[in-house]
Length: 332
Ligand code: TXA
Ligand code: MG
Image 1: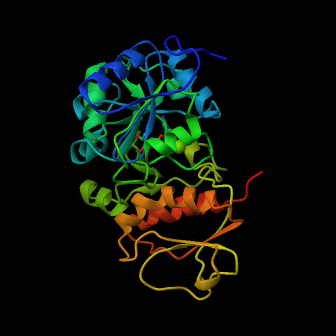
Image 2: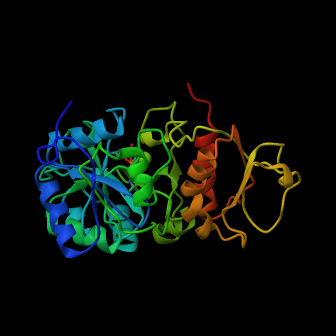
């Protein structure tokens, strides 16, 4: 077990977003510690990307399979672009969507200080400049690239609040910065730009249509795990609540928990053990922001099955459906 130099054991420090707290977080990160922080997508579990030991603490805290490469976070596009080789498409995406919920996978530049372990030994690197003001302030103050996978135990749903982070990681990480509930609620969209054909590795906070518009061309779509593991986050049961998830449920069976979307009440709703509507108004952005918290809440209610109502396949609906499909995937 790798001990953190600063907080060898014991409870996780709960920090706010004020200046003194950020300074404390910066000191912890520079000393090789693990600090969870808010981004606009989900909470990230941060560590110094230039230190193999610091990165290893993340894998350990998350109990994450070590072959998963991590995303390195930088305060802005300029800082991020120093770590990779950006072709024309990558530059366009960086200029259009950074800071924001977009990760670009590009060939790592020879000057990059991001360590091998952070990249899981790949010749490419995942880079992102988040738009959350506390994340930006933290990254600026640290002055090093910070790797940050979603701040949850591996295989659990991503954390969209500091409380969710603590539910999974209390005592396993040095600190968490509480910046409230995240606004986007889904992880970043991941686009690989290594050759002339940009490829969608993970649907996320930036809808595919917006990417297509910015690039003036269609994206290729990487098929899910099973093929060459390009984005191991695509592992089928990655977003797994304890309960079984039944997709596109148009009626609720007795005792099931219901995850609804839109104004319609499905048949059998009166016999549901619990009900959460992601967005009674049918707003996909609101639904995305509430998805992980809703899965956790229904899971915590102890139901055997979560019946998820159909989500339209447009805009952020694609990413929401993707997460639900993973949550529903068979697992061992
Ligand atoms: O919104 C987000 O992206 C959040 C916040 C904290 O920034 N982070 C996040 O990280 O979702 P994580 O580790 O849970 O998911 C990162 C995904 C993984 O599927 C990983 O395999 C993929 O990014 N990835 C990272 N570097 C890669 C690379 N060089 N090639 C292919 N996939 C990569
Ligand atoms: Mg994750």
